Length: 245
Image 1 (spheres, rainbow, N blue to C red):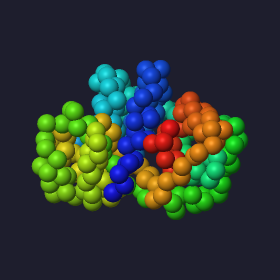
Image 2 (tube, helix red, strand yellow; image 1 turned 30 degrees about the vertical axis):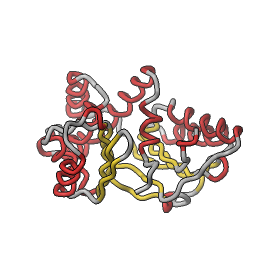
Image 3 (cartoon, helix red, strand yellow; image 1 turned 90 degrees about the vertical axis):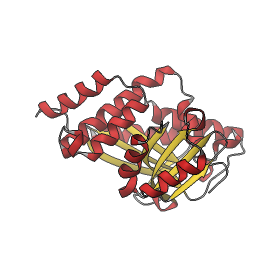
Image 4 (spheres, rainbow, N blue to C red; image 1 turned 120 degrees about the horizontal axis):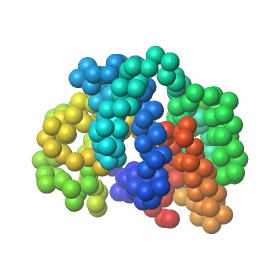
């Protein structure tokens, strides 16, 4: 696998200051609500809910906040129904961008996403305009400093559980799965006590774009910051090679 890995995007997210925590909790809260509505409030019978709970814990969301979110979604028939919408487009110099949203107001979300692209000198495209350049995969990132298991043992555990690929990077391990195998692999690692920095189904670029012009880098950062600040935006995927930043 690529030597500069997808961990660059993860590090970019992790480097955000504590002010971003509220945003992360909002994102995960909506995911909890959707998972409960789709599969019920019992994690034992709802693998999607188990995955979201694991994501919440990885982001240090308090247990009582998680429990409250699940109870609220399960007990309130009139609670907000969120709709999943995905936008695709291009940032500066042809950087491909995919934006996943959960919204209760399509018009507001569409306007905000288009505005972010415009201010970042990009444009929103049609469905499918950039997604063909990405592979949908389960991705689990493990911080080497936090993991007691050696690389070979961890790799065998992941592959035996159904992972497609395993890579060792400078400061992390990366496990890649098919989307349908993600829950089983994540749960096998969790059962073995492996601490996971990130665990999610994501979009991994097939190729990467380098930005060399300072103005393009500023505009791309503006686009990403505007999307990050939007509560309707759940995730942003792009193929900007951030290692050179």
